[in-house]
Image (cartoon, rainbow, N blue to C red; front, side):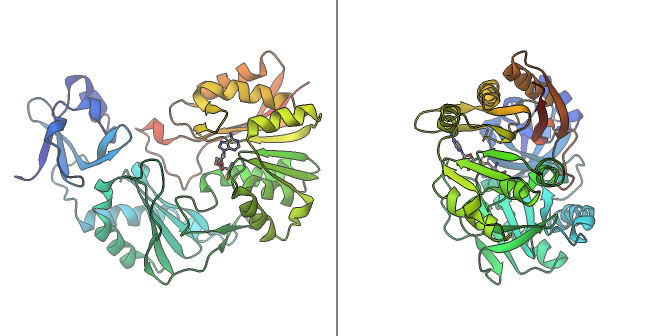
Length: 396
Ligand code: SAH
């Protein structure tokens, strides 16, 4: 036991850990100074030294690491990792067997028992995301487990730590045979071009799968669609395939244009019939208002926090204003898909933001989405259940 660090839990926080809260909170520990090297196994104990849980030290947002086990005798070794990862993969069997979808999450951090680690599957390729140096120190074990459990074309990794807000790695290849990118993955029959070795983001956010399907199958037909914060235009592609009369994609990032063209092209859609605009969304709202443009269907999926030259946008503060701007260019009976991945508030609060944005105007909630089943959540950790999507219809 000599090299195991004991972290003492403040009395106020013992309830958290008795209730199996998985994150080691900085504020919960009386002696964080004893922590030295990330990746070290730590024991959480009460003020009398009574064992609560064991985990690893790894700095990530407000946490100092994640709980791995509430059993004092469980060893954190390759067998441990194998058990967790195999259990997670087994839960995704229906995804592996789905002929129309070959891009999904196979391991979702604390939801699958190991916080700070996610693994995504893209048509034979695996992408591991490491959210701290601490979890990265277990890399050999995780790779060995993948080797034992699955066949793959290649493994790539995303080191989402010590980047000071920027993604610095220029080669994310780990092992196997290097892919030629883009690879084309399928999602409910839609093609998406994916780049696994081109920065932190690969071209598609898998957690919005259900929303894309609903847009294609239920909402898009005949509609004039505006997709704001459009990134690679994944929602626009779903809308176009669902029979939208036209889509307009707006994103500030210069490269969003070629990426969006690529997504249309791999689905055989003539991108010249679609509008792809590189612009600040807030400027676009003004432009559209001036030109008296109106849309029947608008997707709002801003980042939790964004700073452009002219605007700072925070979902927690500015969502009502975003809805208000949108309403000004939405047709009567138009539909708005309001989405956020901000973990700092829940669905109830999000609906209050939407309600505030409507400012007395009548509307109806048509449908709600949260994370899909492959993004397994830990029921003792609400923040992990971050995705909130509300489909609302303006009634006037
Ligand atoms: N809805 C997208 C994901 C959005 S990611 C999808 O489902 O694929 C957030 C995007 O917002 C990024 O591409 C970023 O470039 C863009 N963005 C951030 N601030 C913006 C702004 N003020 N105006 C337009 N785009 C912005």
